[in-house]
Length: 191
Image (tube, rainbow, N blue to C red):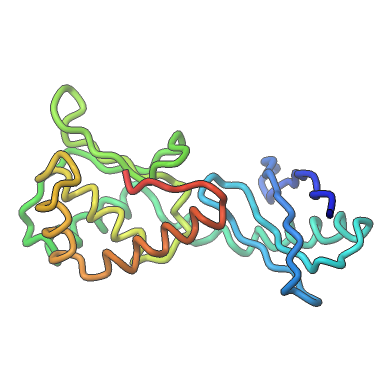
């Protein structure tokens, strides 16, 4: 039985520590693959036969590549998020949804978004910043999902029916989310 590789940490270009899980993969023969997980950590899949003494140079290489990934995440601001929500509302929901604020947040662990109904925070939508570098159509689904909660407080049949009718990529986006959660070893929640 193989001994699991320990967890590692690397520094991103800004000096922040990032947790790295290394997973040996018998399907990989030469190259390694890495991805950023929703919680901000990295998963690096390496060839099963990669010697342990080569791990540190691989981690340095991945750290240098992180600089190339950040621009998309930096481009997505709260103002951009609000513009996207307005576009989705007009294009997919006939402009029928109203909300007070939508913003990126960093405190969600497994949830991708939330929408407040009632009380002093009524109409505030929060989207996890862990999905900033996900494809636009998946981010748009999460926004549409939270906008739909302004109309329906729960995941009733009517909620899903209206969401799927309004945003045609709903099932495809949910499949993407479930796949990311599976790869991370824990399920992700739409909200």
